[in-house]
Length: 167
Image (tube, rainbow, N blue to C red; front, side):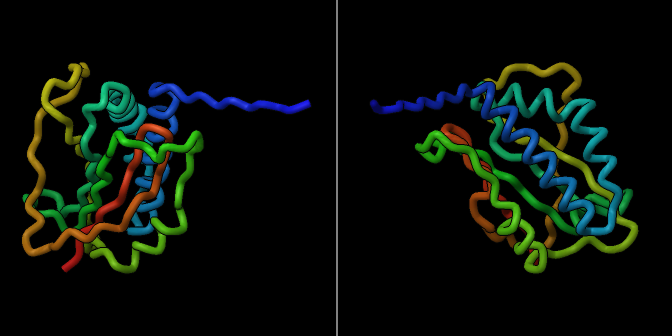
């Protein structure tokens, strides 16, 4: 007798997985820089999670950005981007590479003491409206150069990479 196992993931299921894991990565990153991750938790429960899940499900979320900056400044002291792809890993499994992500910390530029942070979502045209979301512009990276860290989250239909900025 043979046994057959079938795994099926819906976009809604993978959207929840990716959103939760990205929240965790942002908390780890903020803590690494000596800042309080409560701001990530508050933003995620306030507006980010709903917007991220909505746009992941519709395929309109392009990038999650976390900017570290000095209050009142228009220039980012440090920045991480999490670009999203919708081609997936082609396998019915979901994984996170936290160790690989954490190994990238030493390569990135850390913010100076007294910095704060904010989360910005970049989406594609035609995205569904999410109440409470406002338009904004990204801070200047002023001499920082983007470096790809690679894929950190994979699902059958959504992939998230990490990109850090350095001098």
